Image (cartoon, rainbow, N blue to C red):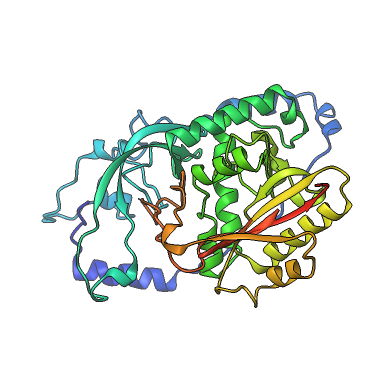
Length: 402
């Protein structure tokens, strides 16, 4: 938008005016009146009604109240100076413009509707490229682009909080409906508003969980997902029916039960807090690469196998940061109970493939799909034994077998 031309004396007067004018800040605390007070005045209810009727939303289709003023007058000048070459801009334009103080992603954001929504649409994305593949810090090679169909999750102001694959959206929709039919939504407070609103919360919780950690290996482990052929092998050959540590965005729907850390994930059929009860039956456990979390998961698996009377086998996928796993606290713990824990094997690094991540969050900063190459220590391990990763290792804790 053009700027008016001011004479030197006008500029000087404006500066002097701003310097001499005193800015006074006034603040006060709100007061609350008892409800019974409305009956003490006969006209109070009518006055209140008249006031509420006057409060209406601004109608942007109507001309602005200052439409009859020139641009200089809108800035505080009494009249347009003669000889000023500035020409007023199209006044109709101000009725069609809205200003957004938040960053906008033109690829994904929409006009605010005041509701949580999800749209399935085509988005241009950038393929991930490792920094060490660049020839120099000043490498100007353009990223490789591709178009994919995704489900964009929108909050009430039209900002895209994250994206899901259509397949991932379908899995969550079925889980949400199934949990509602089972009555699980009745125990969640505040009650779920809609499927779309819970998707926004789910994306936010995932981002919050990852942001608690500063270590890059731990952060990256939130996107280290087991491939379907690995989980299928455990289901077929180890009879695994449960996933002990998962998240609604990445759990395998072929398992009959799964556990998540956040209580609100009940709306998607999750059991919450895997450590609140014993591991039982045949299950897999694939925790994030936080040493304390992995140690607690291993200890809980051993404890559960020791006290359970039913047959119990927990297959844990844990990272192998070195070939013999001598320094890992969870590996040392397993060696103390050789009659219960077995190291079943290790996934070779060059054969370890993770599943594609079915979601993206913080989309304004990262509008690309994640692809993690096979780098040392990027896998997780399993207890009936423990399966070491990457090396990836598998460990098992067991009880009740003859």
